[in-house]
Image: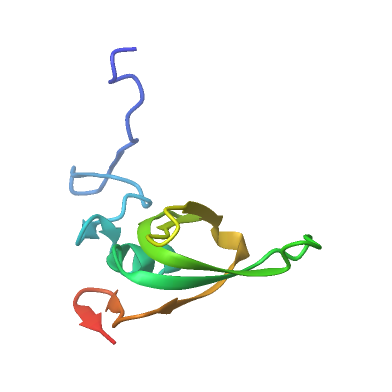
Length: 118
């Protein structure tokens, strides 16, 4: 395709201006959505920091609860990727299994506009 086939819809207003529909969120600081405080955004702000990720697998008899130690490499809406510098292992953890994250240093947190450190 030519790359222009699918476009975001626009709607005219009374002032003959064109607006885009809701869903297109203004972004700031490394493309984090504005005015939204989600776990993945907080984890992205703390990329590169050492953490312990506490995870529960309720349907597993072998791995009911597990702790992953490592450095935050990436975080998405449904996953967390950490690397363990001691073992060299990398872990892809689904957010639905993530209970909480313990940081070994101060947490950077930004909601909604200015970055704060706790």
